[in-house]
Structure formats: C-alpha cells, structure tokens
Image (cartoon, rainbow, N blue to C red; front, side, top):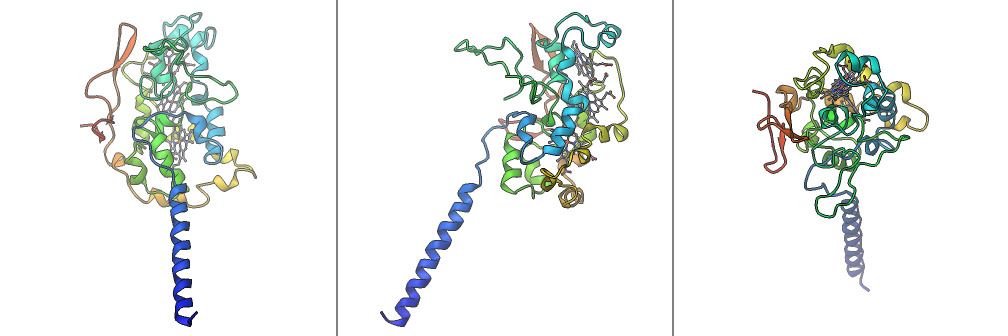
Length: 273
Ligand code: HEC
Ligand code: HEC
Ligand code: HEC
C-alpha cells in the first residue's frame, strides 16, 4: 500500500470512531418527556439531591400528610374547627396543600382512587420509609406542573444548567411567592398565618447538616453551581407566577379559571397581573 493510501485509511477510520463515540454520548442523554407531570420527592433523592431530601424528610413539609390522620394534632384541629377524630387523608378540602400535585398530572391520588375505564386502583403507593408524593414535596415549591421534564435537563447537564433551561420546563424560581400556594391562601381552614419568608426559608431544607462522606459530591453550594446561577435572573424572579385557586364541586377539587400558572396544552406561563 502506498503511504498516502495508508494515511487516508487511518483518517477514515478515526473519523468513523469519532462519529460512533459522539453518537453514543448523544444516546446517553435522555429524551425530555412531552408533557409535564409530578414524580415525587423520592425521585430527587439518590444520586442527585440526597442532602436536600434527608433535610426535607425531617422538616415540617416531609410530614404534612401524616397530620391529616385521626388523633394527630388534635388541639390544633379543634382550634380550626376541624374534627380531631376524623380521617382527612382522602378529603379534597385538605389534599391540595398537604400533598404533592393533587388533581394535576402524576400528582398524589388518595386511597380509593380508581380508573374510570378499568376500575383499577390508581391510588398513590405510600412507603412510610420513603416519603414522597403524599407529603408537600420538592415539586410544590420548585415546579408549576411537576418536575419530570426539568429533571431530565438537570441529569443531562449533570447539574450544570442555566435557570432559563429548566424554567422553560416548569421549574419556578419565585420562591417567596410559591409559599402562597398554601400559606395564607384564601382556601385555608387555618385562618391567616403570615409567613416570615426570610426566617422560614432556612428551615425548609437545612441540607448542610446532612452532607456525609457518601454524598459529598452532591454539595452544589460548595462546588459553586448555586452561586453561579444566583448571578442570573429567571423570568419568574422578575414577575411572580399566578397562584392556583379552586372550588370543591360535588366532592371534587376544580381549579378556578384563570388562576393556573401554566398551560401544558399551550406551553405557556401565566404571571400575576
Ligand atoms: C390552602 C392550603 C391548606 C388547606 C386547604 C389545608 N391546610 Fe392544613 N395547613 C396548611 C399550612 C400552610 C399549614 C402550616 C401553617 C399553619 O398552621 O397555618 C397547615 C397546618 C395544618 C395542621 C397543623 C396545625 C398546627 O398548628 O399544628 C393541621 C392539623 C392541618 N393543617 C390540617 C388540615 C386539614 C385537616 C385540612 C382539611 C380540612 C387542611 N389542613 C387544609 C395549609 C392548608
Ligand atoms: C417548602 C418549599 C420547598 C420545598 C418543599 C423544597 N424546596 Fe428546595 N428550595 C426552596 C427555597 C425557598 C429555596 C431557596 C433557598 C434560599 O434562597 O436560600 C430552595 C433551594 C433549593 C436548591 C438550590 C437551587 C439553586 O440552584 O439555587 C435545591 C437544589 C433544592 N432547593 C432542592 C430541593 C429538593 C431536592 C427538595 C425535595 C427533597 C426541595 N428542594 C424541597 C423551597 C423548597
Ligand atoms: C403545597 C403547600 C405548601 C407550600 C407550597 C409551602 N408550604 Fe410550608 N407548610 C405546609 C403545610 C401543610 C405545613 C404544616 C406542617 C406541620 O405543621 O407539620 C407547612 C409548614 C411550614 C412551616 C412550619 C410551620 C409554620 O407555619 O411555621 C414553615 C416554616 C413553612 N411551612 C415554610 C414554608 C416556606 C418558606 C414555603 C415557600 C418557600 C412553604 N412553606 C411552602 C404547606 C406548604
């Protein structure tokens, strides 16, 4: 073989190898699901946000379902004219603020929920060892319609994403506003309890206490990712997203028109006027 031919073959082979490798890298990146849906806090745990999850489990929001059970917080219930002996764990009056994504795609479904078509049980499985959709999870503060889509963006970029890249898929950054989805909401049976956001935000997930040898690689504060993102502003930080309101009609929770912050049909966000 002539020298030039040999060289030509080498170049051709390397080109093939390069294409194959980069194809594989693309294939490893997961596709973003078409529609948003709630996945539950347990899905944010594990290899990504273990310290946040551990901190959340111990926080008030990691136990919001449990207090709907009979006998729990009897005095507080009496004070709010609720029946301390009643089981509220399937009551639509309570589930929107005490669970994750109730009456939205993928959201919590109480015991006794059935598929209209097949009659099959569709209620959310609860694992007492691993709190998830049945409590007020990550997605109630961090998303408009569930985290399945931006979770893939986070994974594909190994956590190195810009705010607008996940906001496009429903991650919200209007933290102080998002508390109003429940606290001090007009439909609350608890009267008004104004939240001091500046004080309250540090109790939401004091994750640094839960950093161990095993999850030290997930310390996104230490590795600078949080700081880098904090330098930029998302749309939902400039203008607060809408807060859902609802009515209970014939025992079912229906969102009031014009109060949802996102339409998955139109792929459109709605902000406060
Ligand atoms: C609009 C949202 C909302 C609805 C609806 C709602 N809650 Fe709550 N609930 C909250 C928030 C926020 C807190 C924590 C702050 C507070 O106590 O005001 C809370 C706290 C509680 C507590 C603990 C209070 C304490 O002082 O220890 C109990 C018990 C409770 N809720 C039961 C219920 C029951 C039962 C229902 C349904 C009949 C219900 N909640 C409906 C938002 C809501
Ligand atoms: C009750 C609301 C609430 C819940 C529930 C919640 N978070 Fe947060 N999260 C916040 C707030 C508020 C901040 C911003 C805190 C600050 O500015 O100091 C935040 C910040 C974060 C950040 C830093 C984001 C960045 O890049 O700046 C991560 C990561 C995070 N939360 C993960 C989680 C995970 C994982 C869960 C569930 C296990 C969760 N959060 C549950 C309210 C919540
Ligand atoms: C989906 C509903 C929901 C959202 C959104 C929500 N909370 Fe809560 N929060 C609750 C419920 C329910 C409780 C009651 C837990 C308990 O008493 O054990 C609670 C309890 C608390 C408590 C302890 C009780 C109190 O009133 O002092 C703090 C602090 C708190 N939330 C802060 C926040 C902050 C900060 C945000 C926004 C970043 C937020 N919450 C968003 C539902 C919510």
